[in-house]
Image (cartoon, rainbow, N blue to C red; front, side, top):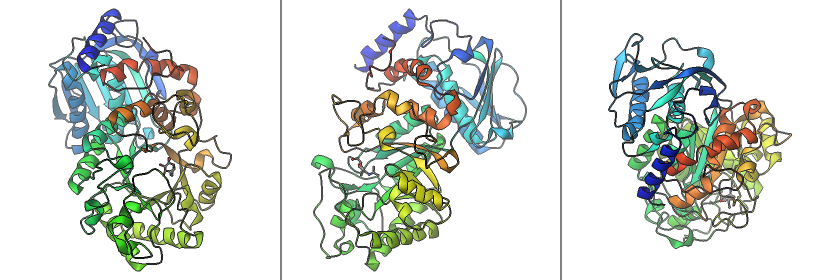
Length: 522
Ligand code: TNX
C-alpha cells in the first residue's frame, strides 16, 4: 500500500472507531485495558483521561543533560503527528498542572537501572525514574498510550487523549537485544536507524551489528584500508555491498544511545573471515588472497591462527572499534569455525579475548567460545549447543539466549514464506513468543541468563521490505520476553495486544507478515 492510500485507510479506521486507534471506546479511560507491549509489571487505572495540548511544556530536572535529552526525544516523537512544538524546560520543582514532567528527583531506586513510574492524572503526566534510561523506557510507554495516529509523519486530527492511572515497571532481563547481519547484505545508515526505531518501540536496549563475514567487511578501519576497498565491495548474490565510515558508525551509536540502545559491534573470527582474507593475503596461511565470495555457504574460511600478523591485525581492528564504541562489549563471533582445528581455535579465542580486555572491553561470543577459558565478564551467546552454554556456566559466565529454533528472525514462518531459511525450524509468531528463556534448556537457569537476543541473518534479506517481512510481527514478542516477568506473559492475551499493533505497523508503513495465528483488526 502506498503512503497516501495507507493514510486514507488509517483515517477511515479512526473515524469508524471514533478516533481511538486501538480500543473501541473513546475517550480512553481504562489504563489497564491498553494493549501495551511489553506488558508492564503493574498498572492501576484511575478512570479519566488526560489531553496533550499545544501550549504545554515538557519539564525536566535542572542541570542534567541526559534527562534533558530524554525530554527532547519525547518532544521529537510527539511533534510530527501532533504538530505541537513542545518546549523542553528545566525546573527544580514540580511544574504543577497541565504539563509533562520527566525527572529523576524523588524516584524509587528499587525500580533499578531501567525501571520507571508513570503517573497520568487529569492534570498532567509525571514520569520519574532512577536513571535517564528509565525515563526513555517510560517514554516508549507514553508513545503506546497515545492514539495510534501519533505514529504518523504528518499532522493528524486527533484529541491526543491518554487514560489516567499509574504504571510501575522494570525489566526482567538487563540485556534485551536484536542482531542485524549487515555483512551478508549491506544496509545503509538510514535502514539501521529505522531498525533502531523498531527496537525502541518495544523497549529493547541492545543492537548487535554483525559487521563482518565471508561476504563482506562493513566497517572502516583506518589502519587496514583494504578491508573496505576490497572486502566491502560485494555481498550475497554479487550486489555492490558497502560499509560504514567511522563517522557513520558513530552516528549510529549516538542515534541508538538517545533511545537507550547500546551498539554491540561484532567482528566474526577466526571463521567467517573470507572478506578480510580476500583483502589481505598475509592473513592466509598460504600468503595468498582468497577470491571475494557471494554465496551462502558457511564454515570454509579461517584466519591463519599461527601467524603473528593476524594478532597485529586483530589488535588494530579491535583498537579502532573500541575507540568508537562506548558500550562495554565487543562481539568476537567464534561460530562455525569448521576449518580451524580445535587445538588452534582455543588458544586463538583466548588470545583475542585478552586483546579485547586490554582494549577495555568485555567479550561476547557465540556459544562455541565456551570451549576456551573465559575471563571474568565474558558472555556467551547460546544459539545451538546447550553443551557449550553449560561449559560457559561452569566457568561462571552469563549467557544470552538466542535459540535458533525460537529466536532467529531469519527463519521462514512456513514453507510458503517468500524469503528466509529453515535449517533450524519454521518459526510462526506463536513459536517466537511462547517460550521462556529460563526453561528452554534444563542446563540453563534464570540466574545464568543475562538476557535475550533475536537475530536476523540476512542471506535472503536484501532490503528494508525484506527486513520488515521477517521481523514483523514477531519483534514485539521478543521485546516482551526480555522485559516482562514470565508470570505476566501468555500467548492468548499477547495475541490480542499484538493484533492491536496492526494499525501502528500500517501507520509506520511496516510491511509485516500477516500471520494467520493472529486475528488482525481488519
Ligand atoms: C549460522 S547462527 C550462523 C550464521 C548464518 C546462520 C543462518 C550462527 C552463530 N552462525 O553464520 O548466517 O546460520 O544461515
